[in-house]
Image (cartoon, rainbow, N blue to C red):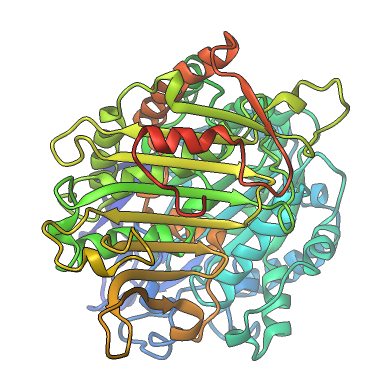
Length: 625
């Protein structure tokens, strides 16, 4: 024993408020003797050694949660049990451990009894009292860093009983959980207007959870463990009161220590701002970061988009916002930058001197895909073209970023979008599939376009004169998503006389295919075996399902992982959204003036016949025409 009545132990700590870092000192002093190897924080006993560190800010350490990190106690110290609500999430923790105080054991027993009760029975104080007492200042005062404990992660799915949440969001979160890509201290909260219990929500989502082929071992145990981390909050019809319930439930599970929060707003557009404002005022963490995922469409035109951006910026910083488009989470999109910037064979060719045209196609035969839940009066323009198509073009055409940091990538993307020339009505075709209908025949959505074709030009030194051709449609003859880069003719080609079978043999082509089978294809000219000199086209084929014997993660899994990791390069920034609407709003205005007529086409066709003339105008033969 040693008395430290006249000494103070000053340790660095970091408190956070709304994502801002505040450097402070945590001073531990005592007028009574205590062991030199330990001190007390609140009711919890914390060991302090020379190798101990205060983990006061930052995302969960991936190494400690990976298989390689298991057992590496020197690098991954065991978290100290500081909250009875965190105990169910600790794998291998013994409830009878000597490190648990009698008070902690009683609290754990109490939390287990509450587990099976209605969600509202967890609250020991009224919402009015919570609102009056839980100010940001009081939350910061009660926050004490914990030695060796990774930050808690709370994930809230707002609109938890909707189709998107059941079919995509919860399965993606489960996939991240069983593959070890979520921190150990994690909980998932479903929020909805329906009156359900924790067990009701678990029953709803249990049937949608499945392990991939390469994770089948112990799958049932993984599902059970994930469901135990899942809770339900009945938000009712007052989002303000509902968010107070949600934050109270989160605080119970998180304890009094560092916690990050991620909110997925899977709600109708008309309810989005009300939910976001209530969330901002009552559910953001004061002990870590808060990130908000917003579903498309991001406005209906330039005016509505700018109004929405100003409103949401009044409550959140831009770095907190993640505008999600699941199509951008596909492996083909992620691979664009890899192909461009890590292969010398492509880097010097990626410009107007070698590329004749670039075609971006998204076609849906409706045989395997239901009509989009985002279909509005803008139809496929707001659903596919606004985000997926133009983001793909931005990634294809951008200059090399300084680094792979999300902001550096988005800086280059927005430059491309701002460089796109104004679309002329004569370079745009809008169509409607005769067999696709939404609601009753009088519904205005039945006039929403299901087909969009256009020729874009980028006004900069790299791409001057190169047409970027877009084709996006539903109800077409093929289900196909791909990018085709057509190179120019070989100058002074000696073999033109030997290409009688195909006049286009002189050009090479790079094809990046996402559907139906993900692949990278390179078309080259090749001699047909035999005594003569006859040329034919051959494809150098990288088919992913043959090369890589793995099941490709769902795009939602990829994007949710990026949000947790703070990687925002595949999410549109507000200036990107504005730049895109600057391109498309004039088209919508011309549609309103009837200067761009709505062309009808049959189900299973290749779209409006006028598209052929558009390609011919720009001296391009479309790949499937």
